[in-house]
Image (cartoon, rainbow, N blue to C red; front, side, top):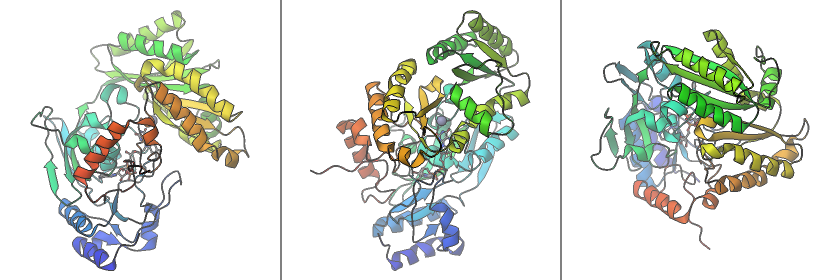
Length: 474
Ligand code: FAD
Ligand code: ZN
């Protein structure tokens, strides 16, 4: 697609000299994403610094029918933020102001381009917790987190990003500003419009700011790494530990032995914290207040699960440094998988109680398609969300292995559907899964999505071709 020079001129004028770039070296890092799967091109990078500028940009794009892709930190994993068809690119990096913490109301308002780590720090400075945690937190933005309804390792306790947002300011495709920066926990005055933008992946509007919920910072965190014989035992452990801690678990992550092998092989300073190998592990954390004596309940509960044979062994972190070392094992899995060579990845969810059955059913199906594929299924067991990943059988197999991506993915996603699950638990649909979505969502749901898209963006200028599958005309 080609954007007329006259339109580019109007866009530049709307944001002023600091607000755009057509310098290829400045634009280049915005055109490729983390996994190197999608490459884009754009005639213009726009860097608005205010909501008024965002509104002016979108008004011009709407009038002229110019497609625009919004980009935050460019850490998205489904290509949603990349201008694949030569769209104008709107970066939120100059929407970077962060407001003061409202200590009594326990809220914080930040512009969309503020990084997640900056939000976490601002909360922490006032002794509050903003509980969203992602390995990309130094780079991803709060606008991107909201647009993707990001998850992470603390969803079990605090919910997805959706649960952390009280108010939103967003600009519609035609430039209309919806100022809904309310800090209300309760508001049933009609449709809750902010929800439309949460998880909309840049297809319904540009989020320019948000009011976020903060939480009391827990003064106790207990972290343990437990060996379990099977995913079914891990599930039993989850129920027992939730009961023993009065629902205070904040993370419950399943880790297979192979992932621990990869991490200890490739990531400096890591080691197996237990003496004997086990096929599966769980990294869990509970947080709470000092007075409730959470640590004692947690440790007694864990000891009981070992006595009962649910867990075979466990180590409880005795210090913050030990807890950090245990978390490093979990957080390094993606990186260590990369160092082992190519992998085919799935970001799936199934009902929590069916995780063991899903693993038992889907793993051999992939291994029948790719003999020797190494299953590295790990993740957020407590949320029913697994990163159901496979590494190539061995070094040198990568190119042939990757040609099987679509076939493997379809086989896995078909099983996910059988289980009543989702083909995207955390990362979204973006460009990566838009073509396959109709196989897994009903016509009725897809039609409702299209109707919503049309109501918010009648000219289809916002992230066209992503997330919302077009109607197939036969
Ligand atoms: P971008 O990548 O820039 O954009 C993502 C999508 O949001 C695009 O469709 C874009 O158009 C849209 N968008 C961005 N900003 C706005 C805005 N202001 N208004 C409207 N639309 C907008 N994700 C998880 O959920 N859980 C994880 O644990 C997790 N771990 C990760 C670890 C690593 C190492 C990496 C690289 C990524 C990880 N991700 C994870 C994915 C990614 O970090 C999240 O999706 C994140 O929320 C994206 O934020 P971003 O600012 O980088 O958005
Ligand atoms: Zn995850």
